[in-house]
Length: 414
Image (cartoon, rainbow, N blue to C red):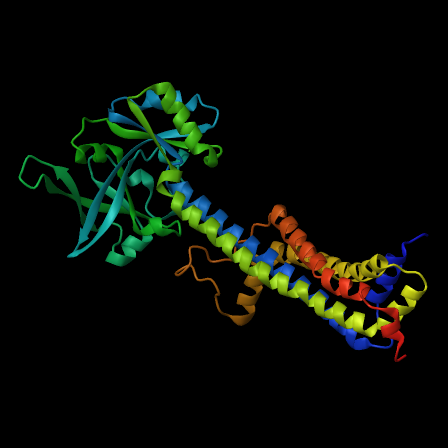
């Protein structure tokens, strides 16, 4: 089979050499270094994707994807919910009333966001029912002022189901200060744990109790909470629904309340990716040292090829082929091993924990007790492409140096 001269000789140079095994060893280490860099980058990006996916499922499973609120309290939230459900992106809807306040228990205090919910409708739009540590949402009975709090809040105050605490909410008044505190005694009826910051900043009460705290009429709510099929379409969906309803309504979506968190996570992934790319670049540019040593070792061979009629371009192509083969094999090996490792990293960490007898990720410290991994083929493609391009660029200078060798100078002392 016909093969170009550069490909034939470059491929031969890549294989083991009898005269200089050291150069072969350097080529092998360059290949291994590139493979390890690609492997590490794929695994780390997959783990970061896994953590981001877990955070999205937990945090965005608790906060509203979108909410449609009225300028005034809503008297009939059911009709607004039916209008919203006509949108193809809206899966379900539930009433919601939100207020800010302070929790007080035995002299200790902390700020809290209180959500008034309907215990029967809430499971349609939230994951909290599946993360109850104690009690049930159904234990929120109107008029009894029960509250479901997060595990971090309960641990901070030392609370158990049945304990009583005080909710302090600000209220506008005609006094000189303009705002007076209003206090309401609450009874803990349940604890939830989703493994996120919301465990220490969110409390749930019945929507009827929230209306009473706000001094509204019975049945009035602040907004209708929506669960969407594609939560990344929340701004467009909410704006579209409000556009149909008119100026008496306004929209709030998760990008306004939690967008900074996920923007920070995306920036963190980008920066770590760039840092890991430097490791891949260092491994790729080891090819420079390898090829320079090969050029020095093959000076006489290059001179003979030149005297036989090989052009500088062909000489340059020979060493570009050799370096590209090293880069391609290293990238391919790293990509395959990275995919395998990313798919099995959770099981590997679990095995290490069982062997060592120590828990690497404790649920008391981290929001998950295992190492999540979400392999995305786009990341694999980008990493492998970047590694291959860097390894190709690393061949240019040594190849140019080889093409500049003068046959008379190289053969003078042979």
